[in-house]
Amino acid sequence: MKRVTGQVTVFLSLTALSLFALFSTCLEASRCACVDYLCAQAAESSVRSVMAGFQGETLREYGLLMCRGRDGEISVWEDAFLEYAEKYLSPGKGTLHAAGDRIGLQNLSVSGSQTVYVTEDNGAVFLETALTYMKSAGLAHLMQEVLARLGLYNEEDGTGLLQSISGMVGDKDSSLEGIIRSLDDIKEQAAALQEQARQQAEEDGTEYEEPEGTSEDVSSDLLEQIKAIRKNGLIAIITGSEELSEYPWQKEGLPSGLSDTEKAMNAGFGNEPATILNHLLLGEYMLHKMSCYTDPAEEGARYEAEYVLSGKKTDKASLETVIGEILLIRMGFNLAYLATDSEKTALAEATAAAIMSLLALPQLILLLKWLLLAAWALAESIVDLRGLVRGKKVPFWKSAQTWRLSVMKLDLESDGGGNAGLSYEDYLRILFFIGDTKDQSYRMMDVIQERIGRKVPGFRMRDYMVYADVSLETDVSYLYITAPFIRNETGSRFGRRYRKEAAYGYGRR
Image 1 (cartoon, rainbow, N blue to C red):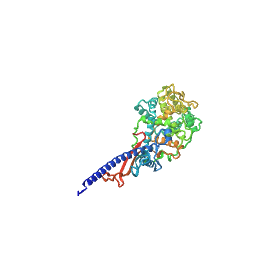
Image 2: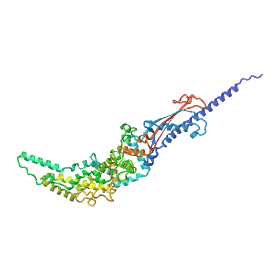
Image 3: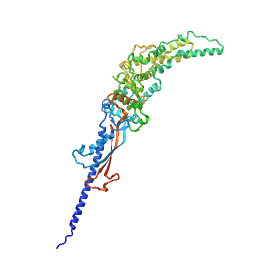
Image 4: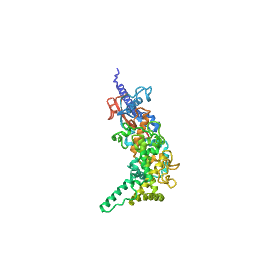
């Protein structure tokens, strides 16, 4: 009887087992590679899906892409990301529609590595977002046109002019009291010097001769007119009898009212350089998207651009501040022109000599001459402003042909300006250029929040993000074989752990 040893059977069994183990290992390795790719795609698709849920009203009205990321201090975007990730990775949903469970997804978790909100980086995030819109909308071509209208053909010219205008405005009081403080009470100055002369005469033992006439008799129609404006108010003289908006700005809850710590978060994220051209584009954004006195809004805040420039608590106060600053600019350039006009300076000097001869104080002739010239420049500037707020234009540099007041008398019935020169909006541009970009950015966000909040209850700019960097982690159990040697350092008892990162930001690649 032939003996059967079973060697072939054992050999075939071991061979089949080895082949099966090799085949299963290859299948599992292929599956792991596919799951790795799917997790990477799920992370990328999920973050893009979240950012696709942008705020529609801000896009339609202001061209800003922003996605709601939190509600107060509670993050809401991570939950949305998790829902999308489950949809993309779970069987029977998304890319795996009607498929069996070949992934074995377990312990899916999400954590935000970096989230950038529009109110952060000291306004630079908003600046970048607004400039992205301006450039994508094709409005950047307006820059050269506006620069040429302002007489600026390069950044060096712009820097020099803006420094001159900053000196005119600076930290000066733009209220009527501040503007005419140097013009006020020339009589009191003369009377004080007259009293000093009397006391000096008594000390010397000589008799003081009272000059013919008294300070009460001395007057200048122009100076008296300037002082009389106080009774009616400068804003009323310039705008007329129109009832002005008193809309109040409540800082609490607005972006400009955020703490310095919150404003400084994600410092350095914004990558737009602080150039004059970028500042110009941001100013164009303000004028394109926000109302002003010559083009007021129908409801809510009516003079939004003036608020951006001044930051005052009411519409009227903002308008008064802006008009006062434009008045300072016009007064500076008008006075510069008067200094070059020999005929007008001679008239001012003759008037000053006539007044001071009555007071026997010839040493004050030069002072009064320049006070009269300053008052003349102020009167001309008031006439200029009356024209500007009515839609007319005023030349930046005056000439004998464009000077309105031929005599030292303020004509409150006339409006300055014409069809050539700079408009009211152009002067808003100038004030925007010399302002602080950070303050302006946050005030623009105030305006957007107030306007959008009328349509979207509870809308707050600080809750909206423009960039998210997220990390997705999940455990995937083994399906074809449990192979400890496939695990890596991030392995878990369920199988293999995957960690994928994805990021997306509006206007960034």
